[in-house]
Image 1 (spheres, rainbow, N blue to C red):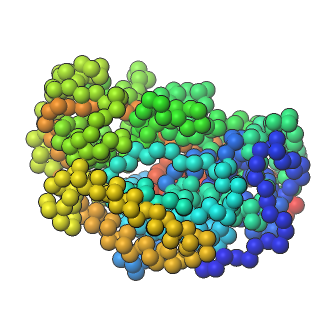
Image 2 (image 1 turned 30 degrees about the horizontal axis):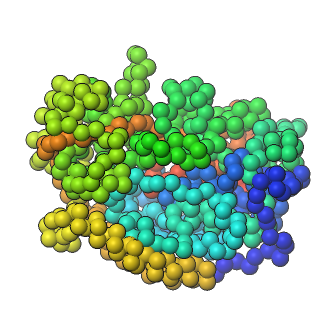
Image 3 (image 1 turned 90 degrees about the horizontal axis):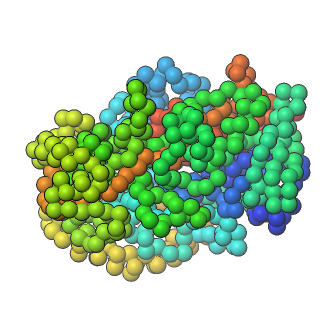
Length: 610
C-alpha cells in the first residue's frame, strides 16, 4: 500500500511553547501526544483541518512511547497465509461481549470498534509509512468463545532519520523486565539504526503528523475547557510564556492519559495511591475536572489497566522512579507469588491486568489491600535456568533480591509469615510436580502456557535445556554480531518506504519461532519450589493507566449526564478509555482503543457542521 500524497502546505513544527508560538486559532485542538492523540491529529488533518497538539510534558509520546506499541485488531487480514491464521468480526464480537459483558458494554461502541479497527490500522500505514507486523500471540482470556491467537500487530522497525533533530523530542523507551518471551527480543537488543515498539509507533506518527502540517507544542498544560452556549470552543493553557487561550473552531479531542499519577484521584476512586509507578509523568487527571466542569458523565473511575511492578533502586524515567513490569517471569515454573501471610492469592501466569486486579482487591470489611505488596518466591532451579532483572542464568542478583537457605529464613528476611509460606509451598509442590494447580488453575489456558519453559524444536538437546548460561551468552554474542546488520537493512526498508517487503521478510520466520509456543504444555508454567537456596523479590501493584473519564459514544464524542453529546468535545484513550470497561482483549488492547477512537474523534471533529 503506497503512502498517500502529502500536503502541499508547510511542514508542522514540534517543540516547547517557549521556543515556538502557540497558535491562537485552529480547527481542532488535541490534548496529549500519545498514540490516541496522534491518531486524532492525523485523521483530522487528513480531512483538511488545521490541528494543534498540546503536550504537558517536555517530550512527545506519553506512555505509548515506552510501551510495546502493539495494537489488538480483530480480523486485521494481514499475512494470514504466512501466519496460518484466520479470524472474523463475528468471532471477535462473541469474545468481547462474552462472560456477561453484553449486559454492560455499549453495543454501538463495540461495533464501531470492530468495524473501524482494521481500517484504522491501514490508515496509520498510509499516512505514516509505518508497517504492522502480525504475530502469533494469544488473547489474554484465551479459553473463552471467540478467542484467537492472531490479533496483535506490532510496529515494524522505524528509521527516525526523517525526523531529523525532532527525533530528540520523542520519549525514549525504558528498561524491560521481560527476560523470556516467544518473541525473540534478545535479537532486538542488538539492533541499531532503527526504533522499535512504542518508540517506533510514536516516531512514525509524529513524522506523519508533521508532514501534513500538524503543530505540536510541548510544555503546554491545558487547564480549562472554553465553553459557550452548550459547546466546547477551545482551551486555556499554561505555557512557559504564561497563560493563553486557543480557539478550536471544530472541536477539542482529549487524549491526555489517565490519572494514575494523581494522589487525590487514586485515593478517591481506586482505594489509594499506587506504591510504584510504571507509566510516564504527566498523568494527573486534569481532564477529569475539566469535563466535570462542562457537565460530562463520568464512567469507569474505579477501574484501571493493572500491572505488577518491581522497583529497582536507581532506575528512573524523567527523574522519577519507575518500576520494571513483571510479565513472563512469573509464568515460568519453580516460582510462586505470595502475600505477607505466605499465601498464594491468584494465578501467577494470568495476564498482568488480571493478576494486578487481584493484587488491588480490598477486603470488604477492613478496606485493606492484603495482596498489594507481594513477593515472588523462586528456587535455585529457577536461578540457574532463567534470566531475571537483567541478570543472566546463574548470575548475581541485585540487592533487591533476598536469598536464604530455607523458606523460613527467607520469610523472616521479607516480613512474610514463615509458617504460612512453608505450608503454602508444602501443599503446592506435589501438585506442581504433576503439572496441576487445583487452587487457581495455573497453566490451563493457551495464554498462561505461552510464556512457559518449553523447547519445542530440540527438546532436551536445545541450548536452553542443557546449558542455559551458554545459551544466554550465545544469544548476546549473536545479537551483537548480526544486530547492526539487521538494523541497517531495516532502516533501509523504512526510509525507502518498503515496509511491505520488510513485513513479508519477517512474518513467516517469526511465525515459525512463535507458533510452537501456542502448544506449550502446562508443565512449562508449573514446577515445585524445592531446590535451595531460595529467593524472593518484592512485587507491588500498579497500573499502566487508569481508564476512568467521560463517557463517550461510537464517534468518541463526550456525553453529558443525559446521554447527549457535548458539542465540540471528544475523548479517546485512557482519558475516556472505558470502552470495554476494563476488559483487556490481548496484547495492544489498550493502545488500539485510543488509536481507533482517536481516529474516529478526529474525523468527526474535522467534518462536523459548524
